[in-house]
Structures are given as C-alpha cells and as structure tokens.
Image (cartoon, rainbow, N blue to C red):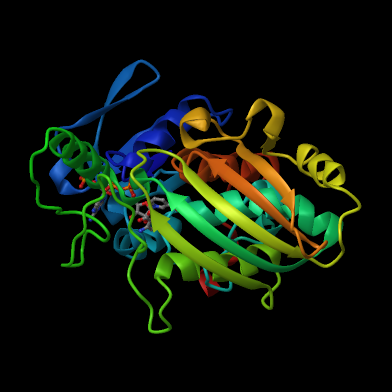
Length: 349
Ligand code: NAP
Ligand code: 12T
C-alpha cells in the first residue's frame, strides 16, 4: 500500500487510519517529493523510509492513496493505475470526471461497482454534509441546500496549521506579524487567521463563488446523482486547527411529521451521531469530535416559517472523515466487494 503525500497533514492521518484498518497490508510504502528524502514515518512499530513518488515507484503496489495535491495526482495517478494499483485520490483533479466514482461509502458505495482503477475522495466539507443529509434525502426528499462552513486550517495543510500557531502566539503577546499562508498558499494576497475569519477558501471562479464553494455544489450533485439539486455554499476559514463545522439549512420535498422523526432518521443513519439536547446545552463542537470517524449533528430545528425546512449543525474531523478515514473506508469497501483490483478493460479509458 502506498501513501503519496505521506509527510503531509492528510498523509499522516491516512497512515494512522491504515494502522487500525482491517486491510491486509503486507508493506506500507510512504511516498512524497524529493524534499523528503531521508525522512521516515512510523507504522506499526517500525520506522519506514519515505521514497520519492515516481512512476516506477508504483511497481508492485496494489493500493495507492494520493494526497499530495492535484498536480501530483494528475502526473502520477494514471501511472500508478497503469502499473496495476487501485488509486483512491484525495485531490480535486478527477472528482468530476464521468468514469471516476466519487464516493462516500455510507451514501453511494454502489458507485464503486464499475470503477476503472481510479476512485475520487470528495472534498472534506462535502463529505460531512452528504453523510448528514443522506438519511433526510431518503426519508423526505431534498429540494435545496444552503450551507455556511466554519473550516479548520488543517484543511489547507501543514503550513496553514503552523501559521495559525505562530500568528496566535505573536498576537497574544501583543506583537506584530506578517501573514504568509492564508487564504491560499499559492496566491499573493494574504490575511491573518489569528483573531480573524476569512471568507475565501481556494481560488475564485468567474461566477463570484470560490472553487471550494463550487466543489460543494458539483460534488453534492454527483454523489446524490441529482444534477438539478440546488446548493448554495459560503465557505469560511476560522482559527480552529482541526474540525470543520457547518450550518446547514435544508428544504425538503415533504415536511417531516416532527423533529423527533428527523432525529430518528439521523440516529439510524450509518456514520451519523446525534448530539442534540438544548436543556443540557449539548451539541457537537470541533474540539469535542477531534479524532472521531463519525459525523456529528446537533442544533436540529424546524424553520419558524416553513414546515418543510430544517436547520442543522454538522461537525466532523476534516482530516479523518473529511479525508483519511473516508479514503481508507473506500479501500475497505472495495476489498469487501472483491473490487480491489484494476479491471482488465482499463486500457480503453
Ligand atoms: P500538506 O500538509 O501541505 O502536505 C502535502 C504533501 O504532498 C506532502 O507530503 C508533500 O511532500 C507532498 N507533495 C507535494 N508535492 C509533491 C510532489 N511533487 N510529489 C510528491 N509529493 C508531493 O497538505 P495536505 O493538507 O496533507 O493536503 C495534501 C492534498 O490533499 C491537497 O493538496 C489536496 O489535494 C488534498 N486534500 C484533500 C482534502 C479533502 O477535502 N478530502 C482535504 C485536504 C487536502 P513533501 O513533504 O516532500 O513536500
Ligand atoms: N484547498 O478539495 O484549503 O482537495 O481547506 C480541500 C480543502 C482543497 C480539496 C482547503 C483545499 C481541498 C482545501
């Protein structure tokens, strides 16, 4: 099993998930850029050397989990598949391609059936939202989703986590600092994240939405198989290290009989945990769900004016269910279904 991007924030979480996975792993091959030559990662009590990700490095690999950015995925994922590795790709490079399944196992595991060697892991914010909405879609039907996100800096990689720590330290000491990383590492304009919130995640598209917001629209439509589903997203970076939160307003086809009915649907759903008790001030927060695989839902309310509209607060660990666990869960699902192999027809892709 190869992990590409093994030295990164997501790669580290992937290795932790592989350590507790039921997959039969004969050997872990951590891969990264040439910059990481000489580094090791810990896996099941051993120090494993990191190797440079090159096309040849995938010879003999059965499963490759990619989390090293879109460019690396575009360059190397097809090379890995050609050499017989099933690829689960965490970047946005292939998510919307027709013949690439985009999978959240609790929601659309059936999309794995006719994979061609490459499977895409959705965006972190999309994953936790569709896990929470799938049971409501099933029971009442979905008409429209309006979501505002409160996203942790770890979603933007190690440098962003370091930036929040550094800036917060300086700020609390009453010292100045120059912001260098957020909102987008590769763009020139920078804003502080300490003591701040930033209404931009990823680059802007010509329509005025950011790419992160458009991922939530397009990926949700693809996962639910509903290209007409209306989704409006506002994605915001907040000074939290781990854990994305979302305020979700959902317009249903049918009005739920009661909020107890909604809670029952959510409680019965795989991968969902309901923490909702106003009398006890109980609801999920990022710090409370850190390290957990499930998606947590609270603050469940019926709209004051429209009986078919429900409001929810949805929190998950963006590095775990939002990235590493969902990818490993896809691999485990493939294994269970006997699909952890590149089909012979791959040649006519
Ligand atoms: P990160 O902490 O900055 O780590 C980046 C990793 O990519 C490092 O291991 C780095 O290796 C490696 N890398 C960079 N360039 C490479 C190259 N040319 N060849 C091989 N490896 C290379 O970033 P991260 O947060 O882990 O995110 C990594 C990627 O995962 C993102 O770019 C994105 O595509 C994806 N992601 C997806 C989600 C999601 O929503 N599901 C969330 C976050 C991230 P070195 O240490 O050698 O530089
Ligand atoms: N830029 O879709 O910055 O792979 O939080 C996920 C998270 C890209 C992605 C982020 C990003 C992805 C972020």
